[in-house]
Image (cartoon, rainbow, N blue to C red; front, side, top):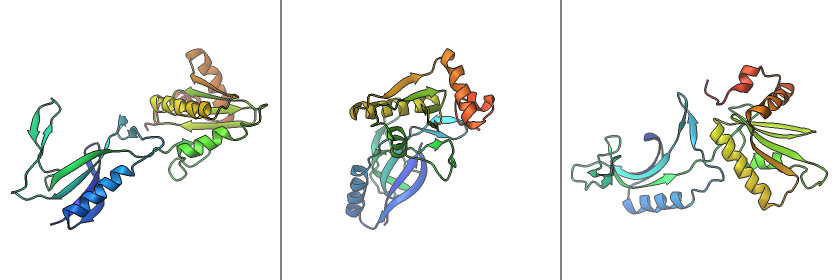
Length: 219
């Protein structure tokens, strides 16, 4: 008999996090993984045939046997039903939500091999900000977050506008907690202001306007 802790993404098997021959050891590791699961900026969307919400879960499971006692769980209608073996091969013993740290494409870096974390973005934001003479603007333009000053242009390309807005709010909270008064969080640019920011993006990147106008990273 083999017990496992597995990770799923939107209901699909992702990988096995732990294997054990005993139920006790498997539950110890399941609880440890759950308790240690802490992220700074949770991944909420993925680019899979479009930009869609994502939900990760972990399960502690065992090889299915006909004599197993199956759980009663609520279905989408809220009714209790007997839970079938997951993927047809494992009996579920317990489950929990799981969070994955988001990573970001920052202009000037490879979008696949040089992705940045929220900590990297915070470092970009805070560089030089203890000089009271320096000011920066942070603004959402479609799915892009601009960190802009006379001597700085950083652009984070998020999967969608909601992600860019969420990143803006997270950075604004960090700026407030650190009492940085010369950071100006401008929110989401309206139609009138977008034109000015499009020009700034074009000037610094050379991107064509069709690319700048895009609202998500869907191919």
